[in-house]
Image 1 (spheres, rainbow, N blue to C red):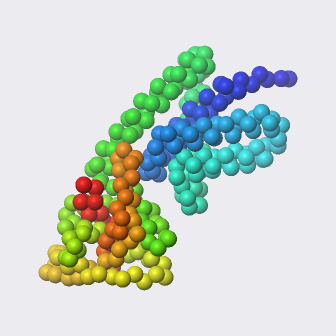
Image 2: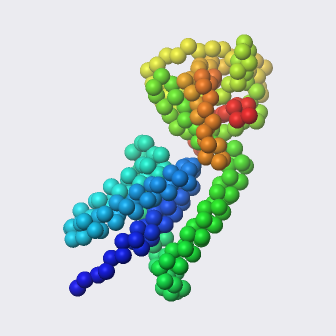
Image 3: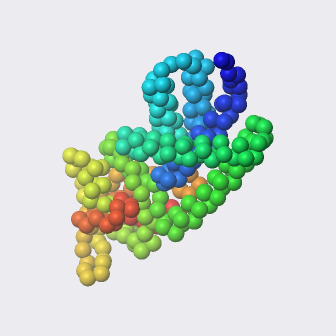
Length: 263
């Protein structure tokens, strides 16, 4: 028995599904990759799948599944900007869970609507666009309420990623140059500094229950903040204060950002 394989249809179907999967996974993991990045990564994933179907049509199922997992890992790595293995594993699990769900929904819709392939793909693309707009609006509304932003901090070749909370009540500044001071979680400080011992500067502060105190602070190499529209705001040599107490009991964020950093 022979089956006709329409490679253009297969490519478009997988391109659409992969783009949707990357978009939903990014939202669930609170990541903000751009549309072009997700589109190119989805095209790469669809291309790899089509090549496997054309050149390896009769390979054993375990080998095909292994190749499929490798292609999914490449797609997550390139499309979501993931660099550590733990986040990559989480992304793969979410990709496959969403894949099972979306595959079932698309299959059911195609059977119910009984549309030809190309009109169905067009309708799906429009639905995908509307879904992306809705999710972007929802995430922007939620982020504006919480004022949480993805943040990357670098110090002497070491980098850490975390989420930063814009603290409108943070008025800390360097008393000499007036530079704004953000406050780093102690666990994140250990991860960022490692065995390094930077030069600390005392920053005066006032808090409830304590009239005055000195907060040790050091200069990092740079700090990147991903804004709502996906653009990067980079601050060179940011001044970071360190505290002995965790900033968030639920570990929702790892740094309190000074509000002037995004002005």
